[in-house]
Image (tube, rainbow, N blue to C red):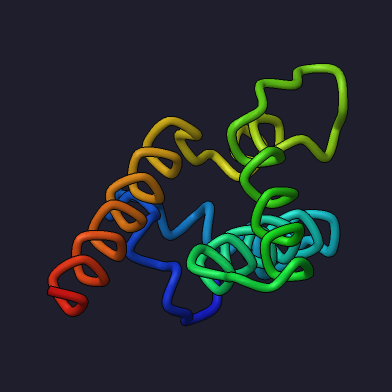
Length: 109
């Protein structure tokens, strides 16, 4: 995966072989980009207050936390194709969001 703020969500034991596969196969690059875009949108709009921001966050959240096995481009299927544990990524996002909400509460106090 490319360097981004989202990389902390990925298992540290992602093999070099998988990384090379992502870089070399256009299909995997596309799926990786879809996953990265969704995680980036989730993180960018997690604290949104505008209707657009809320909608974008809700769409990303729904896609990430929905278990759809029938659609090739579902979160779960993309994670499996890229050899990522979808529950690990989801747990990382939940922890990240909780930390963000805690920070906002502390700053408001």
